[in-house]
Image 1 (cartoon, rainbow, N blue to C red):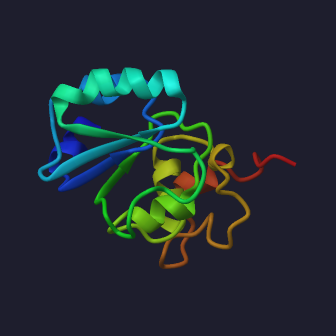
Image 2: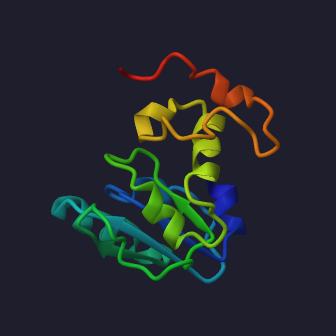
Length: 145
């Protein structure tokens, strides 16, 4: 994650918790970094942990919409989200195609797409060229009923 943050112009960490993950990486985005959190004790903890790191912590309701303009960030992270609002993540991300790239990212990270609400989409098991995608195929038959 640190390397990706270091290559970013603007980064956002959603549901940052106490900010410990961001505080622990030495790299910083070139222009700005922001983090969201909804639980008041964690907001205070994140502000304390990230104040000297140049990260702006934004209190957020943890439901759409994210409090940022469209296409603001070129990197959006969330280490262990309670709920992932993929359409909102795609909205604030400069390079994100809604849901398709996000599904591939989840599969590449060896996570179950069903965990993140990314099942039952028409192209969940196909690459852009229509060929099967092994990373997505591994979840075939493991969808919740």
